[in-house]
Length: 438
Image 1: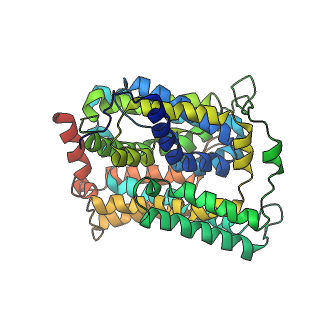
Image 2: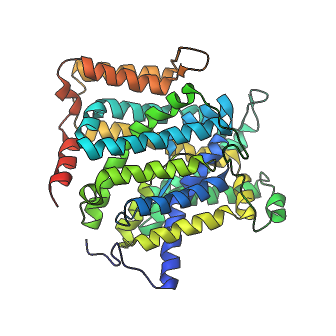
Image 3: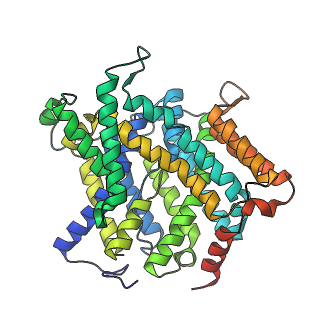
């Protein structure tokens, strides 16, 4: 694929701004949705994603044109952390996720990547990803149908669910039928459409947006200055396993990015640097009160369509994200989005997460008629979705997501015929090819 702008080429200023704004729009919907759903500040999430992306570009020596931002995989753990101890608990959880990324990158640098793939084979990762998506299903429906947690009742369900369905429909149409760049921003298109309809339906109060200043300081959660961290093994137990699972997706993203750019990014600058970049981005997020960060597939799609691989363009998008984070009007605008609009988009997004786990199983051609695979997948799904947990002490609880992951790893480790759990070995072969060639 011949690039319009290669990785180290810098566009002229006017073109630079336009190209960077494209990447900002591609990631905007997902980046603001995660903090809105988890009770964090969207402005802080924008700032942390921008700073995290700049750190990622530096860590990877400016050789990987990838944007990092809030990961949907962490939504459920973040909600649990907020319930457990508020922003201080989220701070610890996000920091622990970053440390897991960092430690894993060091191990990969020392021993290669196959040990990670054997620890988390497709038969474990696929069902766990399905659990992440399906576990959020009730959250999406409650938002779409305007559930009032204080009364335990649904309010004006017909109106809110209608708006949610319209938002969902527009998002689906954008994703399936639109072409070019518009196909890469279905979440943003769906949110804007649902928001406009909500204004006409009288569900949006624009007064706070009008009164908000153009510039404001986001509500940063800075350790020991504005928020005291909540130290708990339970929080680490909630977040750390999800960091391991998202690494499998990260490897897939890097393989796709390598094919698009025509470079062996898993070899140079290396998977260990890419994972370390995610880790540093998440650690930065933890120091300002943002959610864990990981590379975005949406922005990889922008690279494929525009053939603009310039890291300067990605860096420009990161700067714009930081600037937007300091806008009071943008924060007020995001805060005014009705829950039914968010719910409509979430129905699709959470379903896609679950389907991504299924796709991983299909792509690796796992034989689900084999009892071994059937047992592992079934156990993970029921434990994860069912909400099982183990309370070791008052401060140490292994939640369902982590428990499902651990039990899946144990079952894979002790049951005979491990190769059945790898399917056709596609993931191993792809990584080995990228590491040995180029």
